[in-house]
Image (cartoon, rainbow, N blue to C red):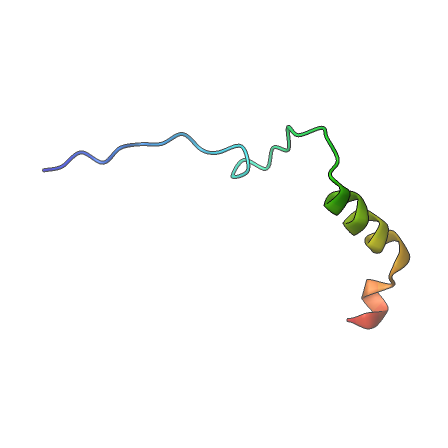
Amino acid sequence: MIAKRVTPPSQLGLGLNLSTKKTRKREFLDEMDRVVPWGALV
C-alpha cells in the first residue's frame, strides 16, 4: 500500500490574508465596490 502524503492546509484555505501590501488591482477593485451599485445591477 502506498502512503499518501499529508500536506498542511494553506493560508488561503484557512481564510488567512497575511498580505499587508495593497496592489493597484486590489485598490481598483475596492474602489469599484464603493462606487458601483452592484446590488441594483444584479
